[in-house]
Structures are given as C-alpha cells and as structure tokens.
Image (cartoon, rainbow, N blue to C red; front, side, top):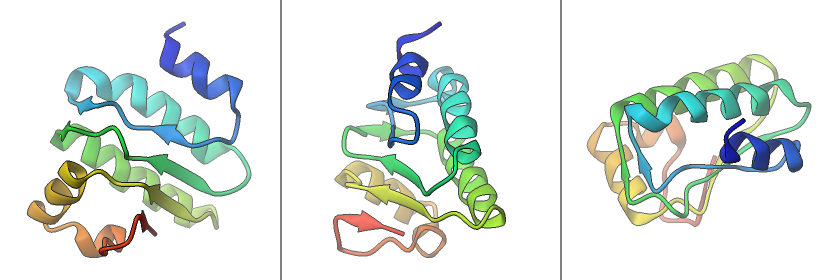
Length: 107
C-alpha cells in the first residue's frame, strides 16, 4: 500500500492533499484517495497548498470529484490553493467551475 493512501486512511474524512507535481503518473494514487473521500460522509476537502504544477489528468479528477460530491449532497472545497494551482485553473477556464476567487479557500 502506498504512503499517500495510508495517510488518507489514517485520517479518514480528512483533507486529501494534492501532490506537488500532479501528473498522469500521480493521478492513479490520487484517484483512489478522491474516491475514498467522496465515499465518506461529510464534505470533500482538497488541500492544494503544496501544488507546484498540475496536469490535465489531475484537473479532470478534481472536476469529476466535485461533480460526484455535488450528486451526493456534499460540499467540495479546495483549501489553501497555491498560486500555481490558481493560475492553472484560471488558464484552463475552470475558475467558475471551482469558484476560484482571491480568497484562501475555494468552494
């Protein structure tokens, strides 16, 4: 079992931390964490503070997780989005999708 999944299991219902470099390589581990987060009762919280770069695969996972959370009546939040994460979301035209504003928390 990888350390990322173990960390999430240890803090069931806690925030899912995005990797510093979110790529296709890291997307599979992240997908597992996001599925678990969506299956837990309560809000889905994503910690974006460590993101230095983020690829399309990870953005697609975030979009899918947000949609799943909304279908389940959960709130989806990106907490502490880093500046590179904000820029990438904006460059992809997803600011409205994630409610990206100048605040430290995105809902």
